[in-house]
Image 1: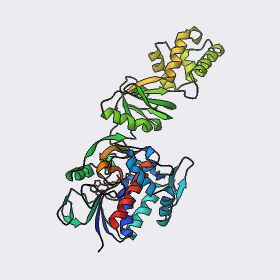
Image 2: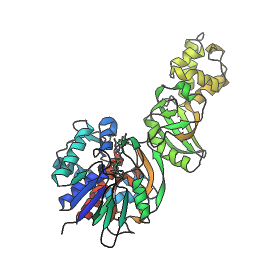
Image 3: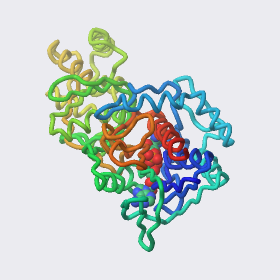
Image 4: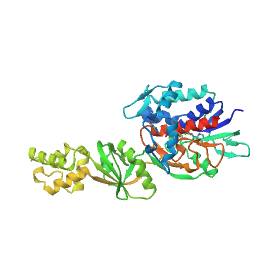
Length: 407
Ligand SMILES: Cc1cc2nc3c(=O)[nH]c(=O)nc-3n(C[C@H](O)[C@H](O)[C@H](O)COP(=O)(O)OP(=O)(O)OC[C@H]3O[C@@H](n4cnc5c(N)ncnc54)[C@H](O)[C@@H]3O)c2cc1C
């Protein structure tokens, strides 16, 4: 007899699981509380959808046990994923660094391909249907919505995380899981902008530059990345900041001291920068410090660099002491800011924490506590780096759950 399967959440994991289970003969219903499925797919990658990363391994993930992701990633290697995409009419553009986008360069085509494949496979997609409660009697699971209750043999919780509530994100999955005895690891925003405890960041709002950012937690260096940074009224954003945000946000959750060091000119080492300064002083001895710095760093940062170095920006460069030059070069390469928060779930791309993986079978995605209850995607305590890794785990874990439920 066909398995009656309910999937809560029509995102990446839910759609992949639905197509897979229905393909095996399962009688599949997706419950989605948004007016349409896949809202995050549409919004992803700035509307382009960085759909997967060809190089993903468990090392690209964080969580209490990131190794949990290994089986899923090995189960759906990139060669199989591309084959699957072809089978649903989706062609991919593979970049040199392993990121992949739809060939159309539009996230829309990913959603069309997945939602059409689900419909063709016979999946019953219910939109504007919020699951309010999940319960179980002896024979079956019961999905509760506002106006009805329906019974199913198997249920997949694929409700994602709390990140980006404006796209339908909810903490419902955690609620459903804990009602069945599952432990929830504290959640925190990741791939998110950071708030700074400084009196100057808002005055530099709009400054965008390439920098090296070093993250310190309790005074210990934990990560160093290069990329764009952007000062903002609330603090700092940019790709380099998103890349260090998982460790920063987790440290804040654990009440640790979080500092950033910004190197505004990472292409030069200390000696080279010092040499450049001295060459400039020789070339233009009568110029002001402000003018000379203007050739090196963004204009809006100069007043605050000089303030931090306690040097008057109107000073003629030939009058700078060796100590002052050393202080400035050090500051340009190591400008410290205290991080005192994140920009929150509303602005985060993903969430760390979630349903504890110790109670889930990594090979089936089934609960070890409740037979017939499955989990996939971001609702689990697995979060990836930026670069297609989060969808990667959602597709892979969704496919495993779909295969198991459809059996
Ligand atoms: C702006 C943005 C850009 C991103 N870009 C990328 C990218 O380029 N590459 C990448 O890898 N990752 C990206 N991500 C992350 C990626 O979107 C998620 O990791 C991925 O969508 C997780 O898939 P999921 O199926 O687990 O959850 P989701 O896609 O969030 O799906 C969960 C679904 O469950 C529904 N739901 C929740 N509660 C209920 C309920 N009670 N009843 C019914 N339905 C419910 C939600 O509406 C949602 O549709 C981005 C995220 C954001 C916010």
